[in-house]
Structures are given as C-alpha cells and as structure tokens.
Length: 415
Image (cartoon, rainbow, N blue to C red):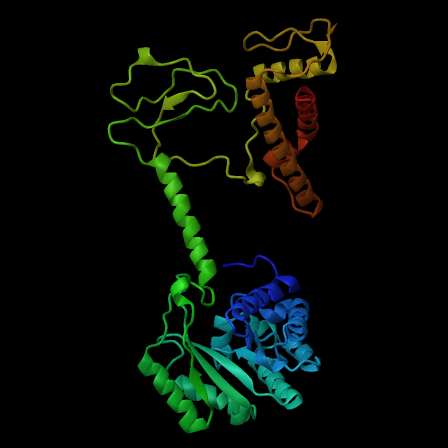
C-alpha cells in the first residue's frame, strides 16, 4: 500500500481527544488506547511518545492503559525501555521461525532477526516488570495449525519468557483484497489456543475483529480507498470509451503541433461523407476510432524523449526567422522546402502574442521545451556520474543552448 508520511503528535492526540469528547458527551469515559494499525508506532517514535504524554496529562488516561504495538524495531524498543512512562508493549510476532518471519515481515532481518528481537523482549520484561502481549494474525492454512502453536510455545520457552509475563492475542486476518490469505476458522483457532494453554501454560485470547463491516480493521481503509479510486477512474473513463448506440464515436480535435489539417483521416462511419468534412481547427468536434494497437507516446520517460523541434530544413529555417524576429531583426518568410534567405536583416520591433490560439500553442511549446531541458539536465547528471551516453543522447544534450534560446523567445512573446 506504500508509505505516505508520519502523523504528527498533534494528529495522533487529536484522534484520541475527539473520541474522548464524544464519549464524555454520552456520559462515558475513554479508558484504553492502543497504538497500532496501518502504521508502525515505533518508526514515528518522537511523535508517538509526545502524544502519549499528552493523553496521560491532558486526558487523564493512565500510562498502563495505553498499549504501543510494534513489528519489532529493536533500537526503539530499547529506547522505550528507558522511558519514564509505563506504557504496555505489544509485539506483532505472527511467525515463530526466522525464515517465515523474514518472508512475511522484511523488518525482521533489518533489525537483527528473531534472536535479537526475543532477547530484547526478554530484557524489556526484566526492566519494566510488565507483561508483554504477542500479537498473532491467524491466516487460514498458514500459521494456525497445532504444530505452529507448538513452535510458538517453544520459542517463548527458549528465551525464558515466563508464561505469566506473556499473553498471546489471536486475531483472525482482516480481509483487505491486497493479500490472498483468509482468516482462520473457529475450529483451528480453538485448537491453537488449546495447545498453548495445555502444553505450555501460556494464556491466549482470540480477539473479535472490530470495524470489519466499515473497513476500519488494520489495512482495510487504505485498501478500500484504493478500490474506490480505481472504480471512479474506470467509471469516468467509460463515459468516453463506451459509444452510445446509434451515434458515431466523437471527440475534440486538438492541434497539438499547430500543423495544417490533411486528408489522411480515418473514416469510422460508413455514412461519413468527404463532402461533409468541416474545416478543422483547435476545439473542433470530430469522428474518430481507437485502434487496438494504439499506445501513448508521451509517457513521461525523459531518458528516451523524441525531439519535437525540427523535422526538416524548412522548420529549421522558419525557427531561425522567428528567433531573429524576437531579437529585433527580420528574415524573409520561408517559402517551401528551401534554405533561409540571406537577405539583409531589417530592424523591427519585437511583439507579444495576443491571439488566443497562438497563445495556446506557445504555452504548449514552452511546456515541451521545459520538459526537454529537464531531460537534458538528467542526461548531463548521468554523464557526470561516469555513465557513457549513446549517440542519440549526445545529440539531445548538444541542443541545450538552442532550446534555451527558443524557450527565452517563447516566454518573451507570452509576456
């Protein structure tokens, strides 16, 4: 689902304060807070601790009524161990072997593996003299068998974590749509609890999944929002992609390059007559068809952009004439596919563009020039880092000055 940003301490506190206020209005009181969900509280250590202190001081919620859940960020578990607040710690364990936990939670290996984590938890219990909760998301057919329960029991026993100082929270997996696994059935859950309690003396409690019906369980809100965005995008696209029965497919003609309209039009309607063709200009409504092999050339890949500036000598000559015009001199307009006329320059006043169509075209050209110059900067950075450019890339870099001059003239005319 990806990382967006960390919550501030104010945002964390506000969630609790708002709920406390709503309960107070109903004559009730907020008594317990658990820091968990999509995020990793100990990865946002400073803001989480600051928010907890405010909950304790401003809302009167006892520190022992506040639980901080973590996937196992060992350095910050050690930091929490030294804090003067007695919050409870919950560890999202989910797997009891090194290989399985690393596969499910990459952070396991990053912070020293299962041995480093369990050693730190043992130390935390000794220093804080508090019971630690181990969270176990039960996934059907993955980690819910009696043998897996025995592996978990043996893990705690190996690190001398006393049964009375540990508790297992068994939480059936929340359905998010982004993961193929499903929650364990009641029979598997019951067998799992039985093994832990009878064979190892470890208390275990199956937890009721709350908020599933409103997508409020761990990971569900983000997954639901992503699905909603995809549905909305598909619905919006279908307005344009699905033709209405009896009507031809139509769209808006956009003359992106300012080229003249030619007769190379694909006729998609058998009743479409050549004699009925309107004179096309920017904004005209036209008939069209979408070829199944069509693709987007303007895909934003700046390393492989196509030079949109000059296709032939005529365009080069015309560009030179326009640049000269902006600089205050004028060359003869280019006629046909010929080289620039070497007639003596004539001093004229430079002007700004005032025609709306020309302004639109100039803005499009400026956008393309900026994109090309940005790509050149990227190519130059690659070259500076020691990467060898190919012939095409070198040609692009060589056009930097030329495009900068053109950009300057376009921006001058837009003033």
